[in-house]
Length: 556
Image (cartoon, rainbow, N blue to C red; front, top):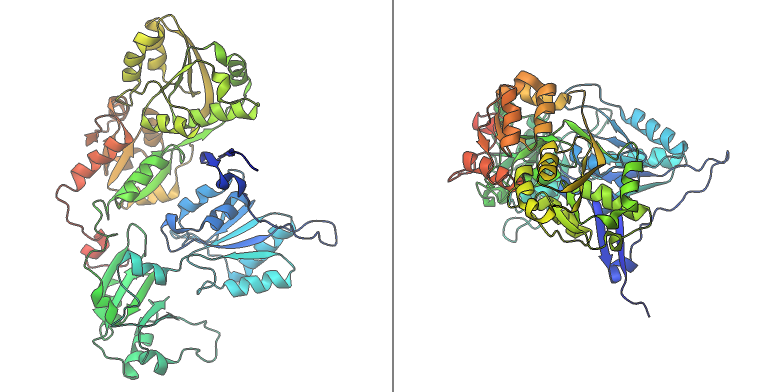
């Protein structure tokens, strides 16, 4: 008889509390391969489907593999946000850049996978879509099998099926299409004979979806027309399917080649051919979201900006993360450990960030303690996000100010902490104003740095290119530290997009650099920051396609 079971798993995303049957079924199958002849145990290669672009569409198994990987070899079609699932110690290797740079050949990719696995490393080959659907997955597994390297194929959602949901284009429909065919628009150049039977495709009783069909659109459309397919057959061209810059243009089989040339369509794009195209609404649920087509730059660390990015993405924004800060554990845990040894002596524990909660309480548990060590101490949290993080650790804040501002927290706390011992848990670059207010108000204050925040020193080339091209319409700035680091990295290019500030301290930091925010959140929370942008962008919003479509172009 098993009693109540609870397990807390601490990982990069914070604590996960499992209970009951979930706690008893916590297993991940990663079989160990046999050692090679020289005694080295080869690593396993995981061919992981990254899905069509929306980072939320990767499978749970794919995330598990990324967590365990020593090295990740990723396509440019794989959303870069997925790399955040990888361990901080994992090596990340791009196999070609969308904004330029040499693409790795299939032979080079296979050679690299084999070499890394033979060195005993766990390798993730992160591939756009599904590895087995026009992804040359069979070629790679053949090379791995011939080299004696163990591998696993982790399927992903292929874009040809995803467009059914994200464009509301019913690729199968009881009246118009009882079948769907996934067709390559481009076969290998070294093939002597085509594997495509255009006679059968022309008479196919359903929907045709062409992949990689941009460059040879004139060829495959001509073949279908020559074999009797009506030139009036509806066609949808879908670019960047499931991404926040998804674009769809309708035409016909008789005009598709001309439309591709006129609009300068560039890959990646899909072509849906069939009567079901007419059943798709003008604006799907995906493209009718209020911030669809709005590009927003979110600076900060990847961890601290995750909540804001998630809220903007849910409203349809195209979010580009600008890692201007690095967040990590302290170089020396001794000051934290000294505080933890006498944690029961404090009357109040004040947390100023979600990451501070994770690092401080994670260290407490690593040293064999748990929440009982906190004794009768009361908890204060700066902002709803920090309070919610405490709840994930099974703790509830006794005090959360209405505004996520140091001044408001200090004013709210002062009546409770005069003459009492207070521990302020924050970063190495802490909130000096909060500490001064508490000490000036009579608190017996101690401070400890539970994590370190340092500035990024090198600008992100994708951010530089996006700012220079005018793609970025808004920059959402969530702290004064992020504001100063952002200005240091990107300078004058920040004068072109509109700036949204989370509060007066951040606004002051921007103004010091000659930048005037267009909006300031009130109250000073990430939710209010999102609402401030939304009020500017979409009052009475009617969804519009991204700028490339409005200008009659699908190529940029």
